[in-house]
Every structure is written in C-alpha cells, then in structure tokens.
Length: 127
Image (cartoon, rainbow, N blue to C red; front, side, top):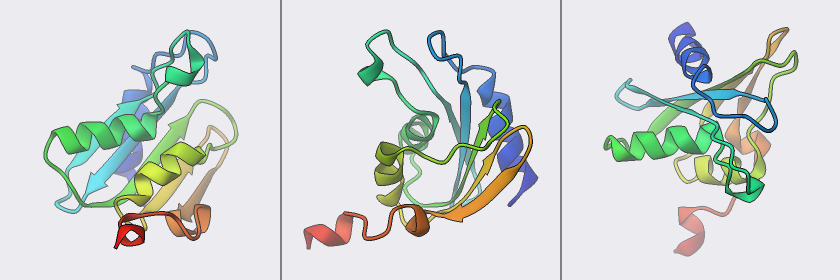
C-alpha cells in the first residue's frame, strides 16, 4: 500500500483527542480520484459518544464530496496494529470492499474489508 496513505494517517494521529484511553489512532482514506481524507479518534467522557478515526475520515471525505474509496490506512502508537472495530467495519462496507493496512510500531498487517466483515449488511441488502 502506498506510503503516502500511511504517512497521512501518521500525521493526523498527532491530532487525536484521547485523554481517557491515551490510545491515539489516525486514519487515511483514499478516494477513487486519489485524494486522501484523514480522521483521528475523538474520545468523549461519555465513552459511547467516542468517534473512531476511520469514521472521522469517512465523514471528512463525504463532507468534501467523495463517494467512492479504494484504500484505508490505520496507524496506532501501540506495538500491534489495530483493525477497525465493528462499527467502523460496517460504515466502511457502505463504500465497497476496501483494501486496508493497519500499522503499529512493530509490525503492520494488510487486509480486505470483506475478510473482516463477511456477509455485511450493505446497500444491496435493501434492494
């Protein structure tokens, strides 16, 4: 996966708001036209209102007018890479079977969204 996508996720990681868990996450989402949209996690004292980096990136991309995506990169400061949570998997699946990379400080892992969320409920489920 392109280094520029991972680098964008690493840069936005610095802006994460994680005063409770101290687990900062940065995400970068590449649209079909090659533009990169970023997001970081934003924790809330009411934990259920926390917004994950992946969903923040999707929201930023949609607000910018993007609707189709190819790849996503997720970067954490922990040794082990983090895969998207269930809610993020569902939100990402709205936009197709993305290629992903998750990067930790000691290793990274490549994946496809369909492998993380087989049989997803998506737009075709409503037809």
